[in-house]
Length: 398
Ligand code: CTP
Image (cartoon, rainbow, N blue to C red; front, side):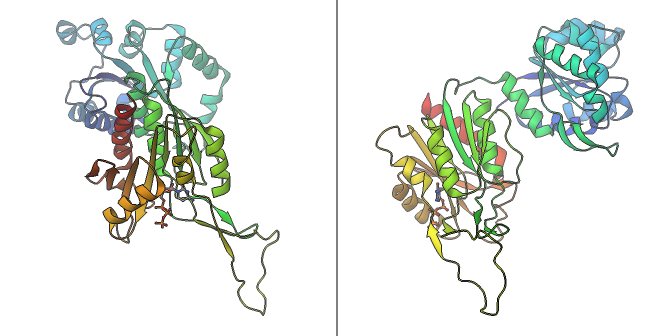
């Protein structure tokens, strides 16, 4: 597991986002890591020490001068025994304290005393985040080597809109893994295609499909977390863009093909996009109107097969080319034939039939098809599928 045996000192600051730190503890635990929670006085107003302790399976540290705790483990030792210090939510106050070198409570003392890296997930009102003082502090902290994840933009608990919302727990987990993880793909370049394509019929209509882009984004993030330089070529997907990847936004299959070609050479190319097989021969320049003559006939042209053309490159073919196959029947038979037809090394096949909930959903049940045979993976969260695949890619390129 990604965080096996790693210890995270988690400082929970005072903010409404503190409730998300409970989910973060659960995710870290699922990834094999251990959490030692530290709760600030402000944090205590939002989550209870009992919930933190129950989820972490560890006692919660709160007071700077706690005689019992000092006998068991001094606060200096506490700050050093972790592999990473994570502050989530990181309030404007906590950021200011560390930027200014203050140490007047347990959390700020640990932050100043630690010899480990610090990762902050800021969460605050948008005005507070944009205040010159907070900006100065953020810059100062970044210069001092503090890592940041988020904040995200969105509707906030206080009713305002803008940057200031704490990153989602899954994103923080990825940042933790990134900060701690081995980098087996350092120096490698990966291209990942993702999302649907939109093939315009006229200026307001297009042909699309149900792909959310979630699986592709998760793969890009997992490869980036392992140190790869990732070019993420995405159609108009609803899934959030992956952190750590260079994002190239495209709309049509033709644009996607051009973007992939421009991104070559690569060590690995993963084609997770649900590319439209056909496009209207010529998109109408103006909106097509209803007429008495009835519906217009839609003449279609076939799009280039991006996967097949990259897999078939005589020169500059990435050493590892991975395709996806969305099937609605005879999964193994169709996908095995597709792997050969497309000339890719691996094919990740999934059954997207009615009722599977996979296309556009959070989970995926895939079968990995290689020249050696087939391997059915259990139904997993798309992020976990991405982690497994990224580990396999790292092993194959080692
Ligand atoms: N693909 C691609 N370019 C296309 C069509 C598909 O790169 N124009 C890639 C997809 O990203 C995926 C793989 O090919 O990795 C398989 O896509 P799929 O839609 O399952 O296969 P098709 O070629 O469309 O075959 P069919 O529709 O006959 O099942």
